Length: 352
Image (cartoon, rainbow, N blue to C red; front, side):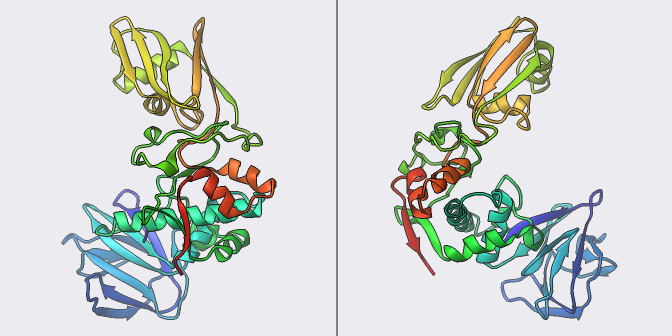
């Protein structure tokens, strides 16, 4: 169950479904409401608070839209396999794509890593994506969706974003998952570690378990973000911190005062004329902007009226380094060896 849209009055979502559509209630024992056509219809809520598609009011807080003959469903410009479920969520409507696991995995691999990655790293990505989805399905089983379609879960763009290499990786590893202590491992991953993965304390929600222990990684040096630098004026840093509510006086200095294994920053000292404050490296990174402040693995130095930030890696740093997996694959490691390197102590199991 993938959340692929949120329709509101100000930003309505438009859906289109090929052929006849069977519309069911969203109950445990669904009832068929109607066989109809849904073409370029806006999703919304009626004055009575019921879900609407176009000019049709369904009188329900949740409905299932299932193509009668396995036609494509589209949300905006993106086509999906499977079917859609619309769920009222406050003043908005959640648009959720119910899709077969292997089709979902193929789509995630296609969106998360480029086609030029080594084949075994693509297969490792497929196993990680499948396992992450299954762990989230268990954790969120009482909610209306399991995962989002963006970087807050895993990037997924349906059939529109699926490529042949993603399909191949999913098929080669069909049903293979990572487990730890008889549970699906929430297989976190990220782009580039810069030489050493991060401990689970660097990622909210990552348990302190052996598979997330940091490891030395000498295999992601081909990533353009293995090393990076960013320069900001003192005024820009001060404004960002003030806007976020972390200083009230004038900024004097910023210092890294705590690091974890591998050089990941867990504490930053903000020095101002109104006193000092300590914040985490991740919070500092978010305040200054994650689009160019690529990780919480950095050093910061003041040079006159500027701060020079030198960093390494891209992403949260916990779990599998995608560029490192690519490097290991180029050295001849298979997907099982790659996964066992980054998730040490986890088991690989074929469940179907």
